[in-house]
Image 1 (tube, protein in one colour):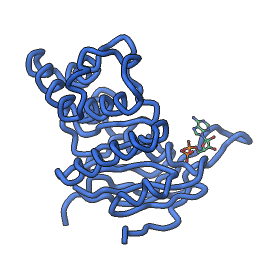
Image 2: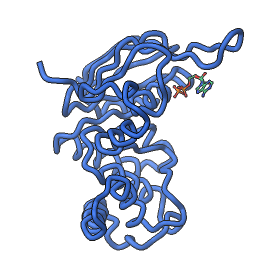
Image 3: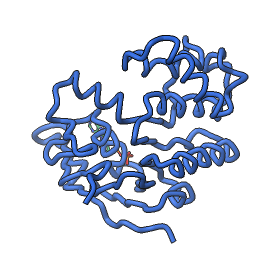
Image 4: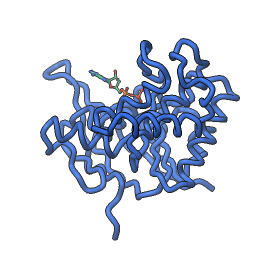
Length: 229
Ligand code: ADP
C-alpha cells in the first residue's frame, strides 16, 4: 500500500496541567491518501484547529504521532521541521495572514526566500501563480488595496509557492461573501483535480460537501467519517 499523505495515530492533546488541564483531543486516528480531498467538520471548540495545527507541525501532541508522507514531524529538530513544513505543506487561514507592508508579489515570494529559491526564479513563479489566481493586475498592491476574496487568492498562491503536496486550509471562506467564497472553493476543486492533497477545516456543511470525504470531530474525538454521495 502507498504511504498516506497524512497519518494521525492516537493523537491526544492536553493543554495546561493539574486542575487546569483540559483534554482537547482524546485519541484521534485517521489517514488521508495522496491526492485525496478531505474536509474536517465539528462545532466550535471541538478541537479542529488543534488537530490542524498538529498536522501542520505547529503544535506538538501530548501523545500519539502524526506523519506527513511517512515523516514524523515531531521527531525532527526545529530547523528540519521548518524545512519540511515549508516544502511539503501550504497553509491557508481564515484571516489570510498576509504581511501588510509587502505587495501581493512579495508575499508570494516569501516562502521561496526561506526555501533558497534564486530571486529571478521566485519572482517569475510568484507572478505565474498570481496570474493563475486572477491577481495579475494587482501584483504590486498591498493587502489593504485588495478585496477579501483577492487577499485569499494571494494567500492560496503563497501556499502553493513551494509546490507542496498537501494544502491545509482553516475556514478559508469564513471571512468572505458568498460569491468570493464560491470562487475560492472552485480554486480548491481545481487544485484537487490537479492531484494535490487537500485538508479543509470548516463548520459549514455546504463547504464540507465539496470534499470527497468528511471527518467529523466532537469533543476531541472522531465520531464519523462519511464519503460524499
Ligand atoms: P475548534 O477549532 O474546533 O474551535 P480548537 O482546537 O480551537 O477548536 O479548541 C478546542 C479547545 O481547546 C477549546 O476549548 C479551546 O479553548 C482549547 N484551546 C485551544 N488552544 C488552547 C491553548 N493554546 N491553551 C489552552 N486551551 C486551548
